Length: 143
Image 1: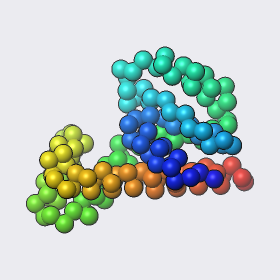
Image 2 (image 1 turned 90 degrees about the horizontal axis):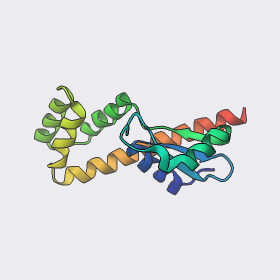
Image 3 (image 1 turned 90 degrees about the vertical axis):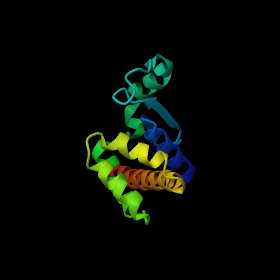
């Protein structure tokens, strides 16, 4: 069984663009940068972890960063929680322009209390997604 602290750690890691591997028995977490998200990172620092995963991939659950469409849906859902009509309009506009992620981030950065509400909403959303994925993976394994 996966505990809340581990789920939150996975959420933080995938939010930073890391691939996460959780050992099926020990629940030990290994995080390795996803090179699509971090092409500049020298993966050599994670060579031991990478080797472990390559040797024993079947012993790990795998969690990867969200794809852009999943991240976009989280931002859209957040808009539903914003009660400030002006800010909601700005965020809606940001999501409908080119570069929606950077535009959204810029507006949120200067939105006062909504900045913290966004980070909590995003983290809660990631935790929910990871919990669902873990439940799916662990139930699939039993069958």
